[in-house]
Amino acid sequence: MKLLHVTDFHANRQWFDWVTEHAEEFDLIAYTGDFLNLFGKEPLASQVRWISAWARTLQRPLLWTSGNHDTEIQEAPVSSGRWLDRLPGSKAFSQSGHAEVIGHTFIRVGWRGPIPELCSGSVLLAHVPPSGCDTARTNAGGADAGDLDLGDAIRASTTAPRWVLSGHIHSPAHWVDRCGSAYSFNPGVNPNARAKVPNFCKIDTAAGRARWFRDGELADAAAL
Image (cartoon, rainbow, N blue to C red; front, side):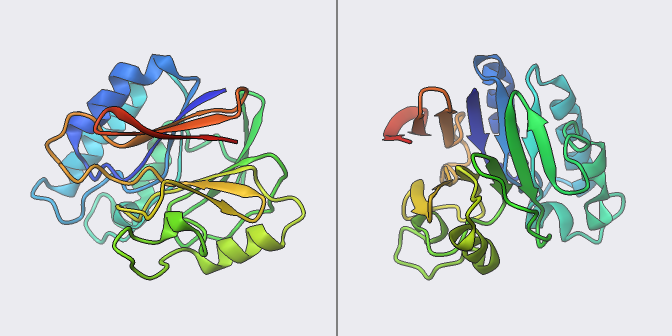
C-alpha cells in the first residue's frame, strides 16, 4: 500500500488542492486532524462547506481523525464536530475504532477520545503523537506535548501497531521516531502558509520505506 500522510492544513485551500492533484499517485490518503482553522478570518461554516466538498472529490479513499480545531467549536453548524460525521471515511471505522481497508487494519483515536484495542501490524491515526517521541517534541527543544496515555499503551502492548500517524506538533524535533516497537510519524506543517506544497510523508508498506517531503522536496527517508 502506498499511503500519503498529511496533517494540520488549517483550511489552507492550496494544500487541499495539492492533495487532490496528487491523490491518484497513492492507494489511500491519511489525514490526522485539524482540517479547520479556528483563528482564521474565514467563517467556520464556509470552511466546513468547501472542505466537505473537497473530500467528496478525492479519487482515493480518505481516512482521518479529528483534531482540536475540528471539534472544540461552539459555532453552529459545526458545534461538537458533528460536521465530521458527513465526511467520506466517517463510516469506515466500526464502533470499536477499527477499519479494514486495502488489506490493512486501521485504528482511529479521535481528539480526546478513548484508545481502541491495539492490533499488531496496524496503522493508528491520532492527532496527537504518542508521548516520549521526537514526533511529540518541538524542534526548538520544547517539552514533550505528546499523548501520555497513547504512549504508555503502545509501549506496554504486546499487540502494538506498526505505524502511528499523527500531527498537532507543527515543528516536531523529528518527523519519525520509535515508540516501543511502533514507528511514529509526524510530517509537521510548512511554516510558509503561502507555499503551494504542504509537508507530507509517503509511506510504502510493501517496500518498508517512508519518505518525508518539505517544501516539495525530499528531505529525509527511513527504512521500516
